[in-house]
Image 1 (tube, helix red, strand yellow):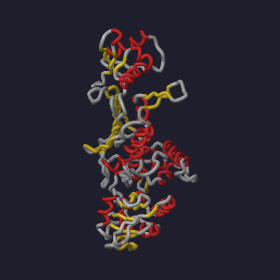
Image 2 (cartoon, rainbow, N blue to C red):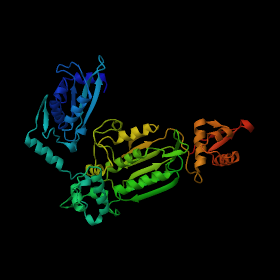
Image 3 (tube, rainbow, N blue to C red):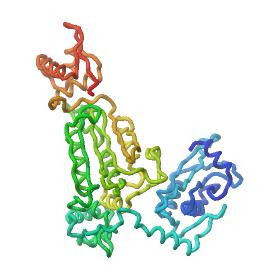
Length: 468
């Protein structure tokens, strides 16, 4: 939101979706109103605006922000509140704090300081107990969620108990499970709300199952390394079934096997430091998002991982949750959990750091590594993320696997456009005889990856970038 957008909101005056507060001295009643908005149709609380609509702002210190954060934390599921700061046009030191409540149906009713509130016209008031109980009963009725349905015919004996215990240990190590967490698989499942008196739930199968066919064919992962830029020809193609943690590790192994390595010389060192093309943490975060947020009710669904010569794509079946748009994924947004039980176990295990920040973290890590921002896409009933590198990436395999030296030659030509053979020799990290370099260039030429133009001393080598 910019200053003009702020003025348009203020012009609407206070009513059922807008509350004006002069300063953060009124942060407690402001949070009561935010809670009321969350239990209704949403709304804005503007701090730094008088009741008559005069925009005055206030100076904001670290102590001010800490006080706001402490009060917002008292709102149950406060991640559904988005905060912005807008500087006044007349004074850059004074700002208006915009707090937007974005309610999410499965989270209603919200509470602030353990009390529910509602909005009636332009008045915020405590929600009557009868109304609160009605909303709470509605929230508890989660039988429509696939993950909370009982896994018919399954028992604890059908689960990977070692993985259950490993998850508990890692939860304790990360401080997200108490030390008192036992070592009995049934008790751990009950702590995670993955088991009822009627049996284990679908979420438990997704997270800890052992055998998935024929009952759970959606617990699958499809991975492919394509030759070129399209899906015409495979270099490697695999489909496996397993629990979510197993599939996550299999995907990471596949990425390490097929992703190009970006080598660079570190200052003060004589050896090259090799790193994966894309940040490993960003790729893991994208995969975790796919496994947590996909629609498991789609029987033929799966998480799909595709590597091309010019990009990497990760797709999962299911559309974005209601109220969330693709453009929201690159900015602060409420956490919309399709599978809160599954996501909660990922969080306890330490694979999710903070709700609603995963997609932003992916973007930040890629930009820090010098790549373009990943593209988030929703199409054909699926959600995907596309990673593209900052420049030309030499292929690993054409008719055979390329050597590291051949790939380095291609990378040099991608940067310097056209070079004489002596210039290429000087740019290589390891010195080699000229006849060896000519032999490598001839091999790349026969593969239609490079070409030679000119004759004699004026001859120059060029990269052929089209590979599809």
